[in-house]
Length: 276
Image (cartoon, rainbow, N blue to C red; front, side, top):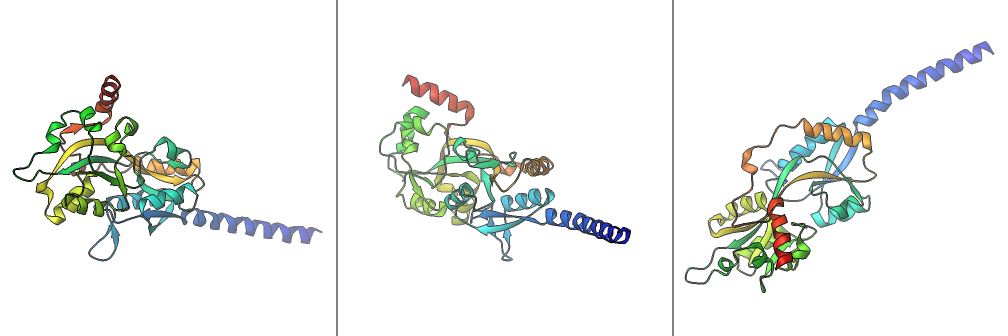
């Protein structure tokens, strides 16, 4: 009896020690699948053929410091939202914590700022500038006949319901398609993240022909997680890793636009429209 008990006890101790050794390794090697799409300067394939960009770099740092291994998978933004909602994808980057998304996802603390703008072509010399008559936000919002485009799955302004011109924007699957249509003057304006627009327009040598009509918002963005991908303790570690990040360079500040619908101005927009 004593011998059997001693043997069983020794095996229990060995198994316990083995589990203690294995458990941290499993925790440290927990992999999270992260969606990315071609969206320079935030996510792109660099000259060496490697995935790079501001969002990719920050997400790698955040998740690694929090004890995860990020695995990046190329997925369009609208598809990524659908997969997160159905627990088929762990992480989407640069997400706004909109109320409808909070129903099916968890959000980290903000890790950078995002600026969405309404861009237009400069008028053809000798032709009338249709934007010049739109001197206020309510005038722009109630303008008829504007052909606008925005990326599918985005909601660039909270006051969309009060702004028919923006609400009626046609949705496209790719930012590059919208830029092509704008430069071809088949769209009057496009709603887009400013840093990507500036990067792509500079590549095309077209930044001198484009104007910013409206700053829609300059808001912090977060990592969005499927609800079952992380628990409260893990999200706390992720947020601690975000707070330890260095501040991002000022070159990512928003542009100067003719009109402003950013939070302070958004309150004015709502009040003015209700009186309109």
